[in-house]
Image 1 (cartoon, rainbow, N blue to C red):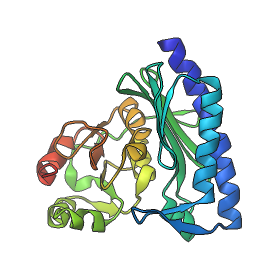
Image 2: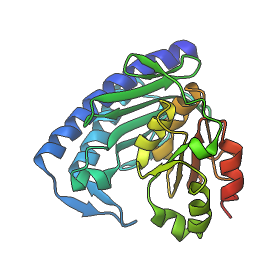
Image 3: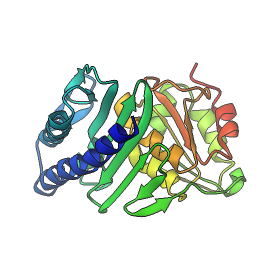
Length: 258
């Protein structure tokens, strides 16, 4: 399996670069925005970027499955499955905020084993493969060593998501214990945790394609990523990623997704 992972890992780096560059051209030039049935925005850039990922990786590994936000689930027979969000942070994209990314995770028989997250707006790419460490470009990264919540920085996407689940007060009580809170949502908050710039990213309302790329990077950087109840289900909508040291406290504070 290791040879298969490496081949796919390097292919993913190349495919994500191509797809994110294509999306960046649309970002610079502007695109029309549509609203999907779930009230989320979508653009031609989302669809084009996912098409590139599917064509590039499907051409090399035709028996792999592929789950993407825009074109759904395509079953495979190899045991591998790609899980992609062509533009994670479409709301940022359509408002001219450059902190969106093209992200893809690689799953093997149910385990997430590699991830790539590219932010063309900053020229950064985070990536990891199981057993090989996590990287920002060529530089190996690691989560912070902080153990004191009062010195910790916490990231999130939107208070609205917590409010919808009746968790706004629990979240506000939690962040009052921390030093700083920043609304660096989507994949970007997870990557900041992976590189040690903050101690936790907390989110709700996510889908599999929002987090599949992030989990291997967080874990290879030495961190921990679970649902709010401390377990793991890729298809649950609540997520906590941390440096590991404060994880138990975060899970206890949020009380699970009930």
